[in-house]
Length: 80
Picture 1 (cartoon, rainbow, N blue to C red):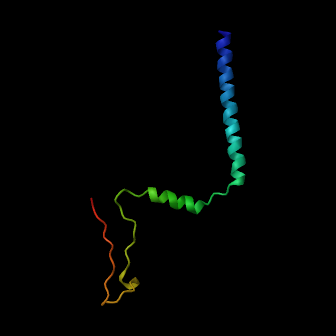
Picture 2 (cartoon, rainbow, N blue to C red):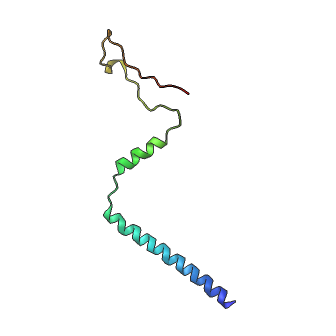
Picture 3 (tube, rainbow, N blue to C red):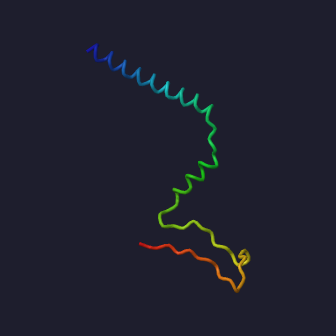
């Protein structure tokens, strides 16, 4: 019975030491890396959109630079 208790205490102690070592390594590596927060936020926003949802913004009439003689180029995609 004593052997089981000491082995359980030893396993718990090793897990605690492993967690502490991992946290210390992450803390030390955070000094050497400088994450660019703008890039991370923009990358995450691409995945937040629903599938088949467009993200383009519609131009208003006053922002268009085309004349009445020239049409606007539209790129159509094939739908499967």
